[in-house]
Length: 94
Image (cartoon, rainbow, N blue to C red; front, side, top):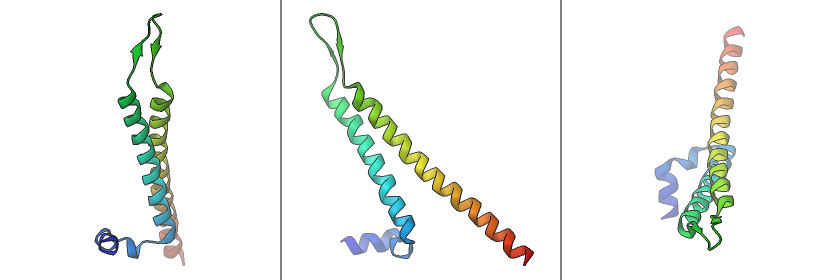
């Protein structure tokens, strides 16, 4: 099953750095979604003295992890685009 999935997704032809990045981005996004899901399951309530009790750290942490995964992925794509552009220009001037 695992080898079929790797072949189906085309992961066998990917470079090692791209595989590592894909794992990091996936783990960050999964951790962020888990934090937001846990915050939703825990819920919020107002106690007897009128203070709102909510898992704010899970909400903020989950949002931060999802944004971090998007930034890492966008940074990698931007870096690949810039290096490809400079490599193309270098080939033209040789």
